[in-house]
Image 1 (cartoon, one colour):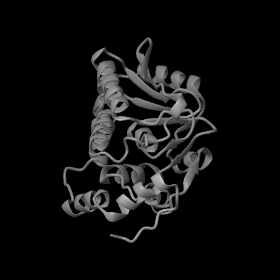
Image 2: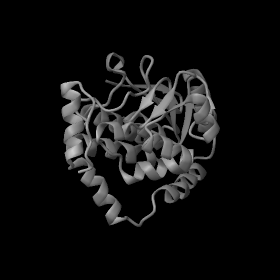
Image 3: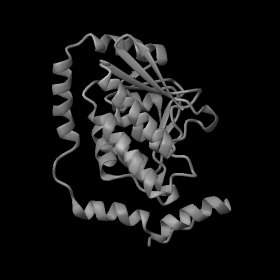
Length: 242
C-alpha cells in the first residue's frame, strides 16, 4: 500500500489507500518507514511523500489509533522522516488531518494543493500528540497558529497555511516533483549538514519529564476512554478532565 516511483535522483513514496483517504495503520507506518530508508540507502537525492486520490492523509485509521503499538509505529515513522539525511518534501495533495499533519510537518518542505487543509483534532477525541509534534508545529507555523490547531481544534486552509509558513508553495504533484528535481542538483553534503543543524533546533537534547508524563497521562485517562467510547456509540463525548 506504499507505492515507490523513481524519477532519476528523486524517489516519490505514495500512500496508496484512497478508499480510506490514506488513513495510516501500523502496517502503513512500517511500510512508509521502510520506503524512506530504502530510498536513502538506494542513493536518492530527494524524497517526496504524497497520497493517492484526493487526500494526503486523513490521520490514523480508527481501528488502530487507540493502540500503543500504532503510536510507537507512527513516532518511529515521523522521526525517520525528520532524520533522513536528504531533503524530504511533502506534496500535500488534499486534507492532512491528525497524523497527516504530523507527517507533513515531519518533512522539510511542503507543497500543498489548493484543496489541502491541516488540523490536529486531538482535543475533540481525548487524544494527545507528543511534545516533539507540538514543538515542531509551533516552530514551523508559529505559536499562535499552533495554539489554534491544538487548543481550538481549528483547521487551517492552504492560504492561511502559506501565510504562516506551514506551507512553502502552493501547487500540485507536478510542481512538487519539479521542485524536488531542482533540490536534487544541490550539494548533498551541504544539505545533510544543514539538515543536521536545523534538526538540533527542533529536537533539543533535554527532555522534560513532566511534559512527557502529562502526554502519557492523556492516553491513560478516563477522557481517553470516553473519547473512544463516544465514537463507538456515535454521540458527542463528555470529558471530565480526569
